[in-house]
Length: 159
Image (cartoon, rainbow, N blue to C red; front, side, top):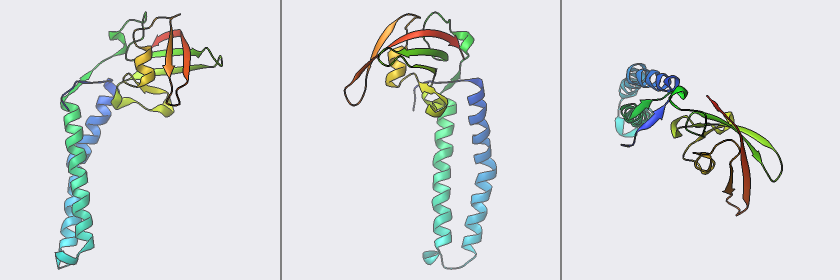
């Protein structure tokens, strides 16, 4: 991962806190589990030892991933972008021109996307379709089933 990842200040803090916890407390806990399992004798038939070593491997993989993420991250703020067009950190109200329903989405980086909170990645099909559009613009989005839905940008706000 060498691409720049754009994060909000809050998300960066959350990742830094998790990284700190994993590299300090969680590593010590795993080391203790391995030591306890080792004290039970023969390691070749010790399921607790094998499980602890596997857990350690997964922990180190997660630490490595978070470390890369932090190294390649840049903090951005919604104040960095105007509201005349859809950018990352825009809160966008769109109208489905087919069924007249309205939805509000927040455009964020892949690392912050959470569909349950209507936070979609700018790299998602819907995010890509909205980027650069202004209020009143329409755009089409093809669904996996092949249907094409047409949408209109109703409102653009800062997150």
